Image 1 (tube, rainbow, N blue to C red):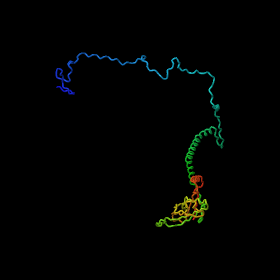
Image 2: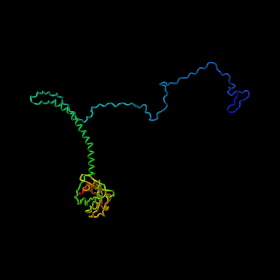
Image 3: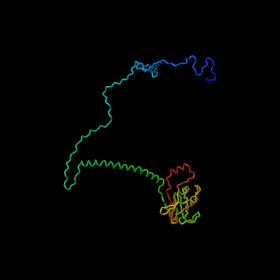
Image 4: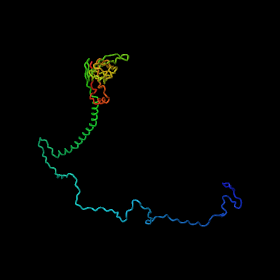
Amino acid sequence: MTETPMDGTPPRNGPDARDWFAPPAEQPSDITYSGALPRPMPTAPPSVPIPGKLKPPSDVRVWPPLEPEEEDRSTQPFPALRTNRKPPQLNTPPTPPAPPAQPPAETTAEPPARGEPAQVTSTQTTSTQVASTPARRTGLLVGGAVLSVVLAVGAPTVFGYQAYKYGRPDDVVQVVPPGQAGVWQHVSWRVTVEKIKDPTGKPERSDRQWLRIVATRTALDAEGAIRHGQPAEVKLTDHAGRTWQVEMVNNETPPDTKDNKIGTPYRLEMMGVVPPSVADEVEVALRPSSYRDVPGQSAEDFVKAAFTSTERDDHVLRFRR
């Protein structure tokens, strides 16, 4: 069966009409070869370079330039010079010759007489000293270690305690008799204590007692007038050392120095709560402030005076009742 080729050209009709897959007319129909097959041509083995017959490289060194062939490039060691010089001697102290070893002297120990203590020979003493040397060295090492630990732990503690005591020195307590005034840094202080009812209006309780504390401040001179700062601390204390805090209710002291008149008393009213059992015996401990309000002083001078001043808030006025 004849099929139309893929390009759409129909088969030819005539003497050359052949099938599409038929061989051309000039090719014999039987192409089978029945003779002997030709031998394959031998192939030469890969060439192996022979030593001594390699072609020298064709590249030429450009830099550095070649040295002249007639120049001798061999290296020769310098000949040794014959001389009588000796190497310099080091500044080392001469080693003294060791003393000749002497044999230990043989001592004949005589038996002690009856009733006399036996004498210890020099050989026994030497052995005892040698035996005690390691024990002494161990004791020194242990003692040094203990001392180092004590210094390492105790030195920071002592330094911290000294810094704490410098910032918070021990109080200097000035006891003021009942009804009298206590004077400190050109200022006179008076204190009175009285019982009051609960200012909040709540029912009275049997386990607490309200107290009103009135402190009166009076400037004695111009220096006292500039020391009009509020007390650094006010508290109630008893003979057993217990303390109770108080709260400031009213302060009539003028905030400006020029308004503080010399000899004029200014009231500071405070309140506190204590147990009823100590309400009649508690005392007032008042710590005056070291603040100084100098008129016309600049901020720089104020800071400089604050850092250079040696005055501390360590003075306490204790008012007896």
